[in-house]
Image (cartoon, one colour):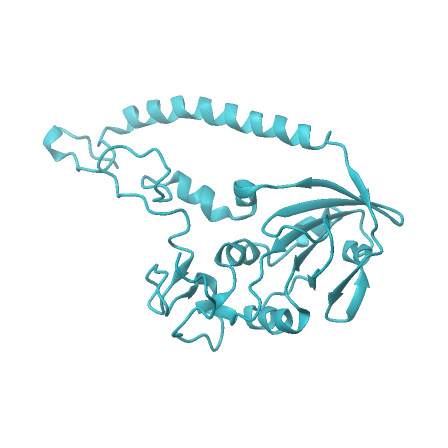
Length: 260
């Protein structure tokens, strides 16, 4: 049962206007037309991605994992397609000092069973030294394969912080696609959920109706303190780390660029 507003003075400042269900449904149906168009445009973009050319590279180049050096082709695990996330790394930093944004993305990619069912493998690569990477992977509880690509050239190495797609044809390897910036959002489902809420992401760049909570910088909630309060202070950690056994408040991010 819904309550039909009789008095406009019952409106709540800084919140959506209060209307009856029929009025809400009419507005929702109008927006749905635009949402459907957006979905179809996304399908068209995906079709265009499938028509991109590709770049061949040497798939025998070695990367380092838990079993030592292996050729990049091993990351395909016998499948023809491979998605890789390139995780940034801060040399010498403790767990709480590693990249917050990459922690966000990697945390959403802990299980690739649906990719595997479609013949697609998944792996994470990073420029960190394997002796630093291995204990971090264990601490985070990641089960996806990780590899160090330190001193490996693009497209396997190179710039970090992106999703990259590869194709294998026998012993030949090809780069087919790579995201830029916000293209990583495709795997972080919470972004889409926040976009459905009345306050959105609470980020300064968003187009917000007057009176809504003021937006902050785009990654203000990527770190929190032990009580779950979003903060980039010296006792904070990337948010998922607080779920890990043994995670405790710390005194420093452990790297020189902690001032965001």
